[in-house]
Amino acid sequence: MFDIIKQFIFSFISTLGFSVIFNIPKGLLVKSSLVGAIGWLVFYISSLFLNNSIISTFFASITVGILGELSARFYKKPATVFIIPGIIPLVPGAGMYYTMLALLEEDFYAAATKGTETIFIAAAISAGLIISTTLSKSIRRVNTK
Amino acid sequence: MNNDKNFGRSQARKLLLLAILAGRIMLKNGAETYRVEDTIERIIKSRKNIRFADAFVTPTGIFASLEYEDEVFTYLIRIKSIRIDLNKINLVNEFSREFVSTNMSIEEGFNKLKDIDKEKTYPLILNSIFGGLSCGFLSFMFGGNAFDFISSLIIGFIVVFSINKIAKYKLSFFINNFIGAAIATLLSIIAFAIGLADNMNVVIISSIMPLVPGVAITNAMRDTISGDFVSGLSRGMEAIFSALSIAFGVGLILNIYLWRIR
Image (cartoon, rainbow over all chains, first blue to last red; front, top):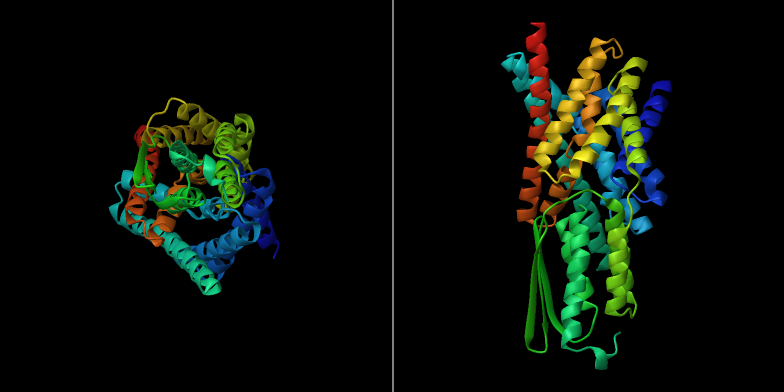
């Protein structure tokens, strides 16, 4: 439990940092960081249970997408303001690095394993975003009919 | 809406220019293309006597046309550099809402848009400090300890500061990411060598995170879903090449380092 609180605080501050880098307006900084922190928490908890970073990334990116769309609707702001900072901690920077490291050490087996995992994590982020955005669009369509 | 007497041919032309300016500001600061198309069409169609308006936007250019009393105006502009400033997207979004729902004159709209374009970003130092903070806390998230935190904090600060400085020279995004990743790796290796960092891998990973193409991935997906396959493909290409350039930057320095210790 203590670990989860710690992870929440860490991810909140790092998403806040990215929000400042991307120039998110002052009033929305905390909200977008909260979206990112909840997304990371979903990633952390589901990777504890499932022990699979691809599926966990998928769940986390769905969470970030849905929360982003909901807050976009609620605060009447573009959804990307909430989604972009929240996605950053999920991007497989580690996978990219380890793939490169394995390539340089001429360990091609490890490079293929890591590289495939990296590509699948990127695909999982995309799939999560696709699902959440499509959901929100179809809900909007049903509402306006 | 608008009083029709004043709305002549030149006004129609100006309206198109206004819509394009709004679209340009959005696209230049990293908005999705479907949002830009939507904004342009909405601004144009908000005034009377416009029979037809349409816009086609790709990440590198905007085409828009409107038909006014048997005459068609078309403009085409090219977007060269894209940087991320979500505040401006938000402001233009608010502006278009206001312009569509009120009776704002076109000149007033121009002035407002010009003010938005001049809107200041967070100061560079604040930007770098928060970049450093996020790298530091990312190192905790990736399993680093307090030493890794301190070195990621410092390296993140330097990386964000220097990529902001490099971006002023308007090189390509490939070179920017390459240099950023090389700086991050080099400093991490130095920090590890002098004993400041415990776990070199964690420090390198967390200090390249400000460079990863999160915006390109997000926008590529959101464009593709809304049916803009051209934009989706080109943004996806941007994401792939950003990732490659980061990998090359890391790889170059690491290769030299591994060769030294071998």
